[in-house]
Image (tube, rainbow, N blue to C red):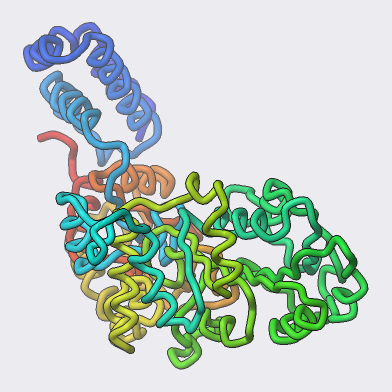
Length: 475
């Protein structure tokens, strides 16, 4: 855009005071607080100023800067202010268990059970057989034990809580031995050593970052030792000159010294991922079969259920954890219980669980199906280019996310959009501000939309979003 055109558009930009006198905006002043209408008006004017200063003339016209156009945008902006803060978004990042976007999705069968429990009274803590108060944990304990072979089970609000209460119950004011190479940092800068410290347990590090041997644990055992801990490094891997002690070896050592052994599996997995061509992940069942005393893992990662911290193990130890007063602060609510029980029932039905749990379905989605999705979205967007952007299908990599399978490359197809008149940052922001927001990523000066993580109906919404972004704002 030539400078003279840019200056002309800036002169056409109406003032805030003039917009506030427009009939539609005056009506808004009668419905909403004046400060809100003024604030939204200022925002819209400033955004249009940025568009004039940054974009090509082809996306601008005199009609876009009239009072009617501005009043319409302000009305839409104020209406959006009344929407819920927590809202649905479209995940086009290719990260399946995306912590920032809510981790695992729940299928519609699970949602139906949650709706039924949420809208009715339930036997949350009422024993129907005995006609007296019961325990909320019984609703999932039996099925967890049946699926994994554990003696007992307890569920709290997340895996960090599970680790905290387990350590506090077993090793408060005593020592816990753990390999230095397993002191992971989880999301939000929370670290295993910090969680252990808050539990009251004293951390005893053994081995080195890359190598820990059984003798390292053995030498650290003394009268103050209360627990041997193994932490699955699910969100990173050390490769090369490495060595770690197998869980079975640690269990044998624990038995030799009459010490309990605990494993924090992190993501937690109930199925063998290797047969789907994915990196092999230790299953919860294998951990229980090793004879370990306590296992903890998340409910909303590879399990594909709601946020929860699941604790499995020997009856004697689980009972100690269950009686810990901290349990009251960490307990899960009826909706989490309903979602988790429904998720576990899907696992009882065999291999069909891979198709019925969204997380597993996206992880194992065949490339031929991904290609089909990409071609469909490409055709939808190609018809809307209007010479305003270039679009192509590219090969790329999806990720499991949520700290799971950190080295697993999932071949995928992405739609790459290269805008002509606006920057890729501007396009990404406009997609993110669309309703519902479309969350993408930027690479090589292109906006990428990974079709692996798109859900039913998402492609149509993306098509409308792109059309609205590159079409003239007002006519």
